[in-house]
Length: 84
Image (cartoon, rainbow, N blue to C red; front, top):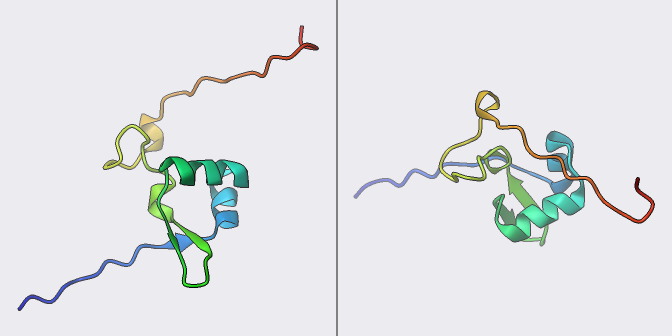
């Protein structure tokens, strides 16, 4: 009989993820609901985020993103009535 090996993945709180990535709590919740990052609920109901999914390449879930391969992202500007 083979012994199963279980890999422990590091998890962090939503607030810690916000600090690490530099985004708001709302953004983290949006990523959670869209499946961009993986999480687990604790027995107490808290959400813990798997750290290794925070920097995953959104176009390829199997390959983590790297800074050297990062493509510039388009900047979207809000347009309203009072804008020139």
